[in-house]
Image (cartoon, rainbow, N blue to C red; front, side, top):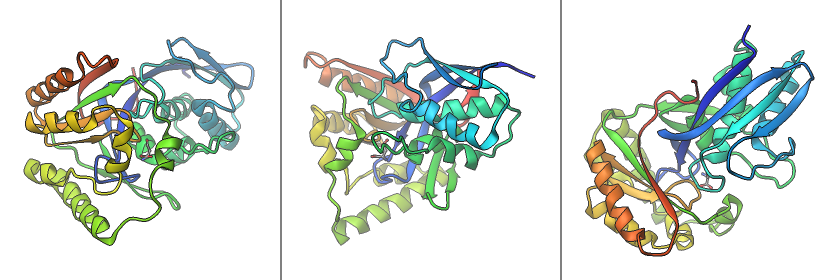
Length: 307
Ligand code: HSE
């Protein structure tokens, strides 16, 4: 029986331009590590060894709120300590809280001998945060747990569909070091959208899914357009339009906001193209006085894993 486990939980890009709240994918080279160990004393404890400020109250930390859901169901004869080695900055738009929530339920499930299904784990990780009504979106949690591109067909009942990831698809991320809270980023969205925009979005979304299934990079390219969300949220991100136009003119298949921002993602065919896109982003932000970091990552098809 194992008493301690160390896991990698990947960062994720949700929305993927035309799939607001229903599509996300996992990243290979960006993610959090966590060590989860059984304790004699029941309940949950947090140990933060990362450089980031994390809520230490187990009722406010997404990892322990999710873990508490699982524990409530399983009633194990032990407790758990969760040690965070966080590498994704909270509020970055690349699935920081999704990685924490997915990682804790995955690790505890493994320590207890895998009693729950993937669907159960996604539901535990989606547990509402009690205090501020924050809701963990499955478009981050599901790809973090399952890897690859994941489509959230329905939340209640939960229906999740894994979509194939073309082999040569790479992601470039830029994270401007400003904080955009998901709650604020959602509050600025209109409640209604025009029929014309909804129609364009549907066409792009269906085509993107087909392009991913058939590894049709031209179709992926022509589908990565958002008619509903980007025009509102892009105002929160410095030089968004400039970054996007540089990415597209330097070979990216598409570029949009990662999750609720402020990170921006671009998808490219091949690692060389993704690195070229990264350089074009560096040129725009360098000298702007803005702190930022960039990453290039393959799509992670495995999801959370033991390391
Ligand atoms: N899809 C949600 C949003 C979650 O865009 O608000 C963000 O991670």
